[in-house]
Length: 446
Image (cartoon, rainbow, N blue to C red):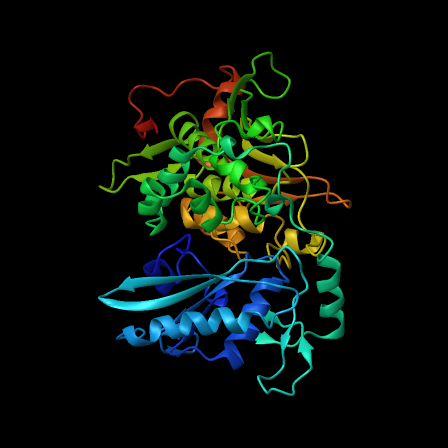
């Protein structure tokens, strides 16, 4: 059975965080079974994790040259993995695949967060062992939970994330094979070939976008969000609205553009529209030096990150679209609801957010595979870095006490405010004489 990514991506650590990958030179049930259990418990809703067998590790990173798994051990390892996983309670079976890279073979164990949390694993492999532990992941380590963490784990058992739930109103035919193939091809998954010639249900099962019961095959919400042509049919107002106020909030003109479809496609379409129609570069040439000053009204990288995070973290069971409000001096990206309760107003004010849990673990996985977001609390830093590099003001992030909404507010570069101020003065200042030297200004739309 294939995994929904490729071995090269896992070894790079660029898409799947290192904390979600564990490298093992050989299969050792005594240690790896605990890690499988911890990934299945998925306390922080990361989306589970991967164990790569055949790779020596140092400080959590792969050691090169890669060794791989000897061909004569591939079959025995896989059989033993299935056998030992039967010791996990309740029943949990990870997805196991054999991957070839650099002419060597590796066993990849994909352990998505389970539907029947909490899971427990034997404390030891001794025959007389009767103690089971609810192992969890802390950073890149598999550990026994504290009393509070175990309580959190049992609380999560009654709360399967919305994107990972089975949608009983949809049918398997609502999943579009072309969208699935395009995604698998883009992320270079070994499932791509199987999707062309293999069984459609098996491919969907391998991607974990349908229910696990063979007698009741239904899509999961995340599958419909990415691989249905009309996800808003199941999740009303799953869309991005870009609203422009060219004359300000009190003006008569309002320009609206709505982007629908699979959520990664609507995100890309909205970003392309903003890049083409909203983003402007200003080039100021100086008579006394060759170098010109160049800057944008808004750096695209900051908008891209803020909007991608809104798609990642919004609640799809709330009937409110993501709205991008373009005013004269700012862009506001509004989504519902607000951040996790663990995020405080003080953290938002100082751009130091440490979100304990992610609302949409599966959506995050797919977006990261497509390089549309990174997760792990890196969004604020990317936005700040992009704004600083462009010379733009610092952003504002806003929510209320009930965490019912979230606003990312980006302010226009002050170099563009000069033009606005000139227009608002309505000729109050006289034009400079022709004999005066002026700095030529070139505005470019992207």
